[in-house]
Structures are given as C-alpha cells and as structure tokens.
Image (cartoon, rainbow, N blue to C red; front, side, top):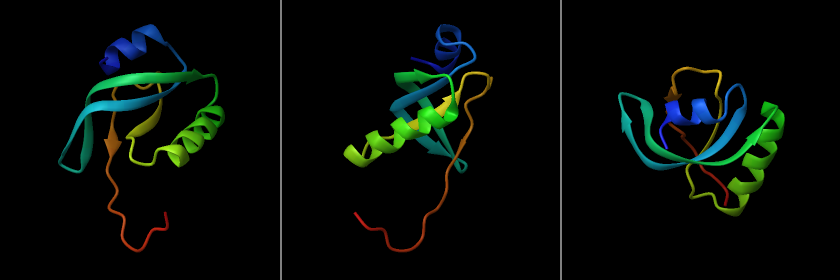
Length: 85
C-alpha cells in the first residue's frame, strides 16, 4: 500500500505500519510499499504497540505515523556505540 492510500483509508489517525519495500536516499528512508498493522487514536497507544512488536521482532522495519501528515518523511539516524540485544 502507498502512503496516499493509507491516508485515504485511515484519515486523521495514527497508523503502525511495516515497510515492505523501502530504500535509503539522501539521509531519508523512502517507503515504497507498506502494510498497515494497526490504527490508533493516540500516538501514545501506537508507541506502546510499537515497543511490544519491536521487542518481539527487532529485525522488522516498523514505523508510527499520523495520517494527518501529507508526506511521509522519515529521516535516518546514524547510531553509534554498543547496543544490547
């Protein structure tokens, strides 16, 4: 599903989605195709579910975004240091 379709199907709500097809370009993550996993009325609820799913499957590329945003702009962050599993 494309972001425009997500916005049409789930207006003015928070969505938790997984990137199906994505690539990096000029410091941004470009999501070409996504699967909506759940919708929420608040960003706090969405974050709780994100944390739960991320703990279960940290390799999945999950995102939370509000459909009130016309553009899906995801800036990449360079993480440095040691991470614990």
